[in-house]
Length: 323
Length: 290
Image (cartoon, rainbow over all chains, first blue to last red; front, side, top):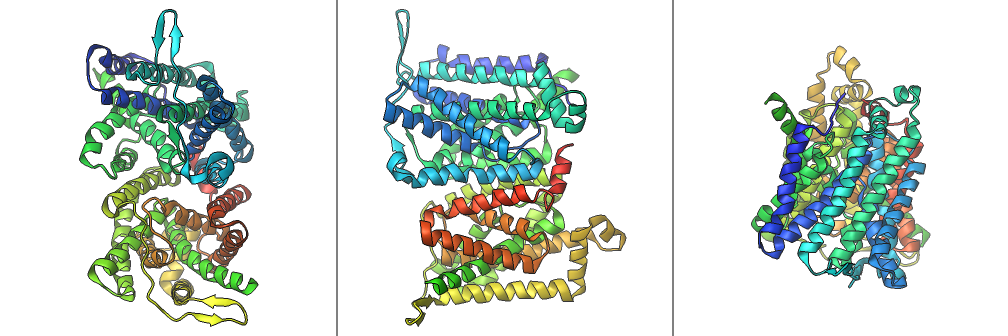
């Protein structure tokens, strides 16, 4: 059994991360750095949310379903009912959460590879439905001109989240840190111990008085809600969504890659994976290989599973321990 | 109309059986869940397209080239998957998922995101106006080749010693090993046969449907659906499953339109996975608990 508590190594990782995050304050770098860091935080949040479910032992290959539903739910509510994006973002999360409930009800008995396959197939249901529901969702063309996040007034300060990239970056850091908090709880609180017990042996866990189904439901709902929230934020940041993109393999695979690369059993692992891999992809690979730069993620996934299945976070931890 | 629907289902279904056969062979013998199956078919399709377009090689001659190339690729895949650790099924699933992503982007880089189709030669179509039935020549090639290959695999399966050894490996790896069967060799042979089947399916796929770097998941799902339906190593079951799935899809396309097809295959897969958890996938469930 693997025990991980936020210790010295996690503290070091946190320092690295905060250097990353604090960097835009002190430098006057161009907009692309803010953009990359913001999106790294968004993807980090997605990876952390995915991992909350994965901690119970269920590997999902279909988180794009929650992401896409969150994005579409929020964008459509914004477009038809003219609600504030800050409200519709939560609506997007709730829609993701509801689909998570559907997963729980239908896939309750599935484990391991069967669960992974079922989730992979379940992405097609919302995708094809939205693709064909032309009147409401404008079909495969997608939605464009989605309202950006409106400015926030804090006393005399006006924070323009939509246009000021610096503010946007901090907004996403805040989002990632809140998800991180929940993820830490899913590892090291009493709830986290229950989750771990479920992962290691469900029969033994239920003998000890852990309500296995409830723990799995809670983890799945939390994961789906946060992923839906991430999808909704993405929709308002980008201003456009289309079914082939937001329900694409990319958004199912990315959280998986980042988590496995960073270390699935560490509180900061998935976030660390995002902070390293996403900037590497965008700043190095993208300029080098414009079409097909996402091949990096596939390559990293294969190499990680083959050579260091516990991710690089684990490796960092062992290094510091030996020191 | 009904006759036309039946003929379409039959021809698509036979092709689906060919797609599933490769998946089922590899999965049955080695327990490797190859999520990159569809991407490999696309790769073979692109290879045939390139050969036909830039080197003017006739379609029939591209088939052996593609089969040979894909056998090589499948052997590489075998080398890769041999190194995957326990729990094998779940880990192979994740590795091949990554491989699928890698192949998609490599194909995007190599062949661009344009839709490609192997152009059909202007051929006479069998037309029965009184029955309102059309049969095109590619359809005949498709059905003929698919059934021919399925039949030859069936003969190999039932009539040769190698087939017997492969079947024994599927039934119980440990017992097969005790009986003196080299299970490692059987895995390699399964990958070689699977590679041949994938290599054959690719050009046929490219003739029937547009190639797009991100379009492989559909073929993978088809392979998984039919394999779960039939159970591993049951060739007649695979053929039956292919026809049923072809029928269901053709009917959907006929009544609802082509855009709903993916939804139907996804729903069929989910229903099968839920209805048969004790079937093919029990091992995955057990090892995943660890």
